[in-house]
Length: 405
Image (cartoon, rainbow, N blue to C red):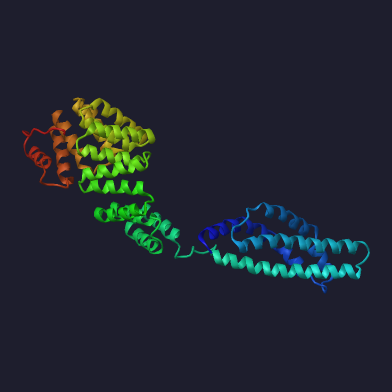
């Protein structure tokens, strides 16, 4: 069975089976009748309750969507025929019975239709069971299914289980290399794991397929940025935007590459494009604020930080940027308040401790400043850079001239 037929069958059975199961006992009672059945069995089988249930079943069955799978089309048709046959036999019997007896012709017709209904019912059950087994409705979907592997991999990827996700992407790739979903997904996993060169090789595979090309180019741009190849990153982002100018991340990555090349005005223009498409992105507002700050436009940078924080109040990077901008304006207490907010959210960011220490130093609160610089030196990943040496010097002496960058 093809995947499209299996999905169609699954959805159809989910709608159909409750109708069948609700009336299964009534059908069983009627279909089991034969010429040796005593009148009381006929009366019981064709009770008002059973007949009403069966009559109520036919109309909903007609309204179910026509299944694509040929076996299910037969099941649907025969189910309706079965119900009609049972009711025909019952009405025929009851009409003759209450008219004062059964003629030989009426009795013969009754036996014929009852036997037909019985055989049809058995055949119906076998075919229904066959279809249910074939689509494996109560078990895992067939394991060699491309979509199943991709969906499983995407779920694992979303949970950060990149290594295991790649195993499922590999299984999907073994099945089909013409779609590109698995190659793109594996590229994403490798990018998130920092294996940028290998990630690029999978994005290139997607580009050869020419499906998902815009997203693959965005991924490739991000990898080129991480590798410090900013001109290449810019080229990939431009190609992605030619294919689809509404890909927000393409504008963002283009902006990032331009900023690394210190073309801040152009970077800001790209972020404005991205914000027109998605104005509710806190990250994009933060990046715009960052580039404005680097351009010396402190007031505008603070406004962007406020917009970012309105969308994502827990963006500690936005609080930190707002704090450094306030410090440049020499609004020391405002800056200090921003750094305190940032540290409430993330106390393990060494840069925030450094910036707070500088503010406290300007406020001549030496003991507090020293504590902040000590925290900075504890958390700093690099013990050799200029900031670390200056902070360490301040801890030992109050003659250091530290500044916010």
